[in-house]
Image 1 (cartoon, rainbow, N blue to C red):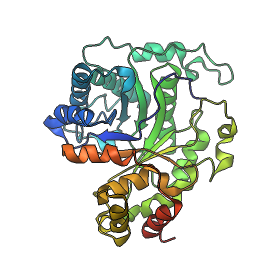
Image 2 (image 1 turned 90 degrees about the vertical axis):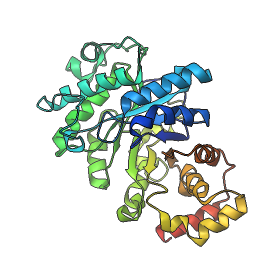
Image 3 (image 1 turned 135 degrees about the horizontal axis):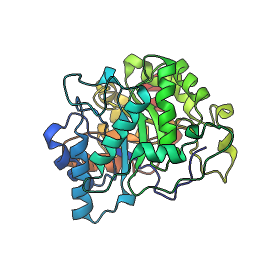
Image 4 (image 1 turned 135 degrees about the vertical axis):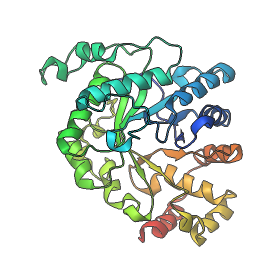
Length: 339
């Protein structure tokens, strides 16, 4: 069961901070100037500068009058297989998986909340986490919302074994129990059997899947129906409860939407819609993603990592367009999935 948070919903678009290096803080600030209100990053120095993301957010809050509750922070635990072994690591690579996740999360809180007091993660988990009590049937006392927290925390990729993945996932669940995280998710999972295995074993179900969206993975056609409570109603029994505060289904966050889909960007179907709605081809793709590809019940969140301020504005505009007619979405779905 997810904790009831009186906080903002996940924004329709997040600013992707990979591969920005020393420009990260300035680009995050620019993105917020152009209308973004959320970021995606990771505790992985190989591709991200999480510390500079925190500086950029700090700058945006100071100069744009934004408060923490108006910002969505999403970061990730990256297993050793995705880290640069020669670079700085946010955990001891020889430590057990659970300790690695706790240390990485502690580092992320420090990076993303500069100049703030950071709680001791292990102490909060020991006090409030359900699994730490050793009794699955007796919930612990509810943890207060912490002053420093992460809105969504993502396992950057499955571990090498299901057991290792579940071990890491239990720590993510414990962070939710302790009031340190709102939602948890998984990235780079392209096999529906792996996703379903985690989903079935998880006490707190994944709320997010973030995958590369392009043709070599079939644009995740085998996964998308698993994320929607309308297309997979038996997997989301709580979705029918209108009073439930639990997320309805799994939010799909595709990345490489533009980079990995040049053929689609150049297609006649995209060109026709760009002319019809007086927008750019890139905006057509972002709007298509934002509208859940027209699939019933599918929730999505657009990721954009552009470094161009004009393109930042256009990306934000694309997720605020009036929803299209089903015929327009069908044309694009046919272009992508061959329906």
